Length: 275
Image (cartoon, rainbow, N blue to C red; front, side):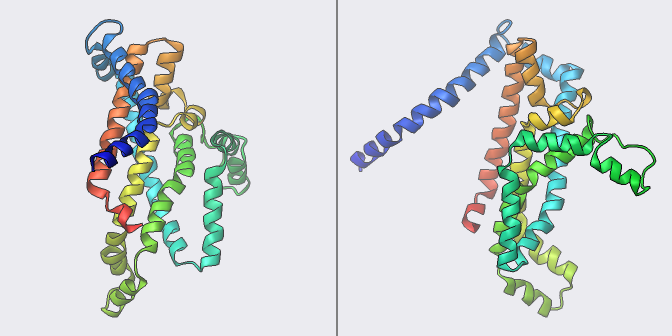
């Protein structure tokens, strides 16, 4: 037994060394800089939460992440259900389109939304030509543009776990609920929704955590009034060379992410068994 453990440890040693060198050491260095620059103490964390500008950026980050998660869940749930009940051939085609959107370069997709959402873009031109609006809508450099771009990027990450969960639900259960007199709404709220809740929460947590640290899409589609935490960290480090405050903001973001991940593992680890 001891020999087996020793052998397993030696086999895992390269992976452990990699994690130590490229993850644990940088995180510890970041933490040290957050409490040592410009002087020893927690003044960077106090400034981060006490300054209105930084507090507004943090609030905006969590608000956008929550909004994107909610909209992605509302849009992704019916798509996942349709994929689960579609004929296998058609479902594979739709599924391939969803996966293709994930494989497309993130920067290219964001620039495509910049073209679509600008005042002279296709969306505003179509709305003007249909007479729905009388002047172009401001769909970029604001919260609307950030939300649209991030929802588009995050949708596959909520559809995939939901689809896997729904495919595991036996259709006989829904048929039995109908035979027992349940209407469509009752079958949804009392049968389908509870059985798919694990996948929905797992996907929502994944989208929320990923949205917290997104940089490219908010930077290109949002304005300065809608800055998110990742963009603020980049400015603090690259432009202002304020490694202490930037490290504090990064460590707060990492801590929230790890707490949410621990919450998911603690309460929704059964999702892996469903898949």
